[in-house]
Structure formats: C-alpha cells, structure tokens
Image (cartoon, rainbow, N blue to C red; front, side, top):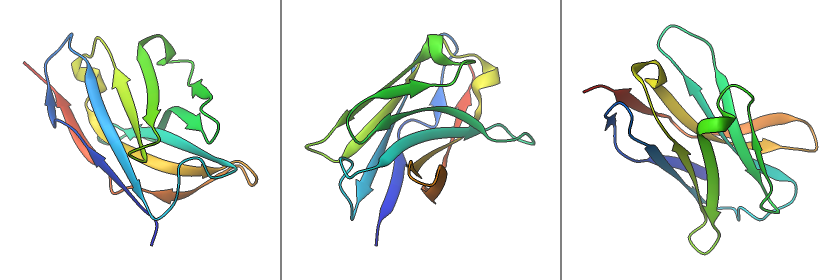
Length: 120
C-alpha cells in the first residue's frame, strides 16, 4: 500500500517556523508524473493549497502563502518537507500531505493529517 504520513511538532510559537515532514512509503517520490503537495484546513474552514514539489524537484506555491513557504525534499529518505515561517495563530490548522496526479489534475491520495496549533 502507498501511504503518506505527516510528522512534526503539534505546537509552534508565534513568529517561529512551522516545520513538517511527509514520509512516503510504497512509492518513490520521483515517480512520473506526481506532485507532492501540502494542504491545510483551519477549523471550520475550507481546504487551502499551500504548495507542492514535483517528481522532478520543481516547486510551486500558492499565492497567499508563497512569501513564507519553502518546500523541499530528501529523495534518499523518500520524504518531502514544509517550512512555514513567521507563523501567527491564524496558521493554526490541520496540515495534510498528499499526492497529486498531474496527468488528471487531481489529488489521488491523502495523509491522515496532523493538527498544528500556533500559540504562546
């Protein structure tokens, strides 16, 4: 089975950097034509696409968060990471990693999500 698992601190202080890792098992993150994606959902609100890294290592960012976002990967560990800097309580959300299939323009697999709270 292909599985995605988010990991990282569940509590981050304001002004600090939120760092999460997604570990992929059962499939290589360099497999064509997938994009490895970060999405978040604040409580009671809709999903927000944060950004992605493609099978070739190209990065893409949503316009609202791109100035604070960095996505990278470690192919030797089959992991990709999210860094969101200068966080505020408005960044509190459940954060998901996901696999997007570029050939059909659709997310086809999700991690279970991990809640992150920004609070002092």
